[in-house]
Image 1 (cartoon, protein in one colour):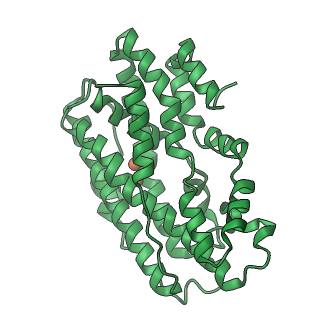
Image 2: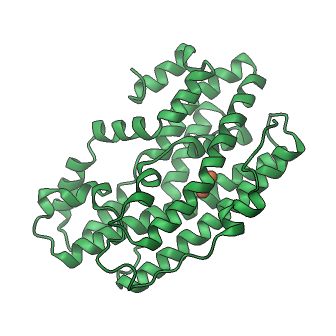
Length: 307
Ligand SMILES: [Fe+2]
Ligand SMILES: [Fe+2]
């Protein structure tokens, strides 16, 4: 694989050129830690009696979960795959530059993990809302199940495709938070820093997937094409256990928490969210002909991602 990655990375990457983002309580006066409209359960009528402090705690927990998800994802999934690419341990012909680029991505993602945890700790201190434990294991298990189901014995290919999926989906969080003037400046800054690196990662993994595809045998193309809609779903489907834990910690009764979750995270709503945030990845698959393969189209259809 050839092509230019992030021109001027040594100067322009966040890890190379941008300052540590710090929370200054005066600067954040009147702002919220996270956009309320991106937290579906906050608007539910079952939470109408929840007081202002508990509401702020729910918003903070949602923010923590998002950032902690990022720290785990970057180090346990994305960098695992980026290292395979950098070492040339994938079935794609890589130019020397493309291998170095994979290590630039590795550095970027390591720094994203660092600043995500850093800002969580700063917010925790400022708001005095303790961070609840975060468990990434269910997400990892879901990704591994898809890899074993569609790509048995092809460990490095599965790990690479997990990265392609995560690096080419575009969530509303990344798109909207940097521009939302109601949100803590420090949060907008770190998410903005993250977006400016991810634009380059996105382009890199689109190219990598296209080249990988051309190198695959017809039999492997079927397996890869069938796995991709599942990897997209694995990436984007929200974990509801942390939402429940946050509601309980805010003093919401278990039965109310369950009812709120059942209403706010209905299957059709979740599927629509996956379709929306996964549209670039699904288009990428479509563009190489992956969904011309009937079995793959069927998998995407079963997940509600294609008509
Ligand atoms: Fe990242
Ligand atoms: Fe990335």
